[in-house]
Image (tube, rainbow, N blue to C red):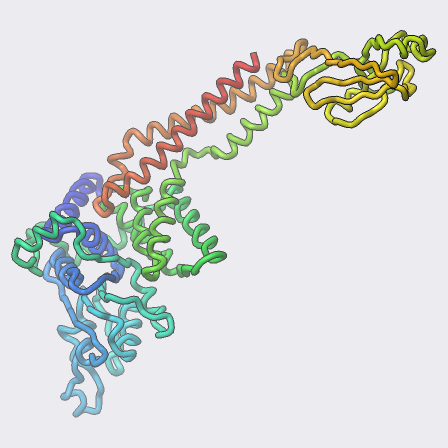
Amino acid sequence: MCAKSVPELRGRVSDLIKAISEGMHEREEVISVSLLAALCGQNTFLYGPPGTAKSLISRRISCAFHQPAYFECLMNRFSTPEEVFGPVSIKALKEDCYTRQTASYLPKAEFAFLDEIWKSSPAILNTLLTLINERTFKNGEIIETAPLKALIAASNEIPDVNQGLEALYDRFIVRLWVPPIVQQQNFEHLLQVRPSSAVADVPQELRITSDEWAAWQSEIHSVTLSSETLTIIHLVRHKLAAQQDGGQPVYVSDRRWQRAAMLMKAAAFFNGRSSTNHSDALLLQHCLWTDEENRPDILQFVADAVQEAGLDSGLSLAEIDRKKEDLDREIHRELYYSEDFYETECVSGKDFFKFECKFNYFRLNEIASRSGGYIMIPLEKMKTRDRFYPTNISGNKIDFIQCQFDGQGNCRISCNSGEHATFTPEVLFKKGDKKSGVDERLVSALQESLSGIKGDISQMLATAKKMFSDIEASHSSIFVPVEKTNLAFSGIAVQIEQLKQSLVYCERLEKRCR
């Protein structure tokens, strides 16, 4: 697709969606995603109660194409293969050949709608599986190529797990919930106007030809999945895996992931982009749920993943945070006191407080003469509330004096004579005070490391801001409502704020290194 045709194609598809959505209140997203599925050859399942315009949506989708071979059938338990695949040819039977007249039936349709699909017989569903999967139909001894581009099915129920329909259900990559009208204004408008026509007024220049559709199928494959999209996919897979440990597991086949990726690529292509982004990944909300119970969880999983993914700037914020925290610890360890530093004396490899004891009993005792009037209190006892005996300066225990710290840094000293005193060690340097005489080469090395981390964060922030400046245009999608694409904006805004906070943190560390 040439550069000139990019905005033209986006505008054309946008106008096409508006044309086929005319008068269809609160169905715009369902119609746009159903059309997207048809544009890339994927099948769609419309799930909702009766009377919510599911068949009307399918007929409107067919109006987007130029003279399509369209087939529609309301299924029930009495439906026969003849109603879907065509009647048996009487002329062929006379020639001992069992074939069907498939003209105007599903095997010859380009687009088809099967209403209440799960109510049909096993014979129809089994044949349908082959036709959808391989795009072929075995007509007697002949294998016919089916021109089916996309099939839309509808039902007000999900196939039961015990019916053996998992394989067929898995072929419907897009699954859309079609509820009744909610907004009062739209409901009142519905009551006032005549019923919507099944035939949409679509200008001929907007309608898609078979040649265009075929050409687009190969061009869609040239679109790449962005790193952000892959991150979102992995986040969703992890959430699904975690759910298996505590709730009802949701199985997503490899085929479904591959077809979902094609849907996201198609969304990017028709939005005029060469790679996918967050808004395209939001389409996973319509691809992964299996029933009404797990649908809300899947929608939330995808929304959370889109918000968490942020932007891929080529650098790991988690790795930078780890380096920043390691450097923070090293700065505090090398340049600052990690705890209060006291005036002590070292005796036999241990630190002691030296306290001048003025007890009369002590001064009269001969041990005082050998201590110079001082007792030694072990520093290690400061963090306990144990009672202990001090020593003299020679390390001999003084057993008629007991000491005990109170947990607040004060030491109560008691003598057998009844005398007592309180000793409060002198703090030379408080916890957090900067050390003096630190090697300048060490300071320089720490500043250099910090400068590198700050540079990486600044680079990430500049990239994120640049990407965010044009994000509204790049992330808008004709297939995703604005309120959903805002999820991507909020997630990236959080990432930018985190980068700003990290930068401020680094600036504070810089000041502590000076």
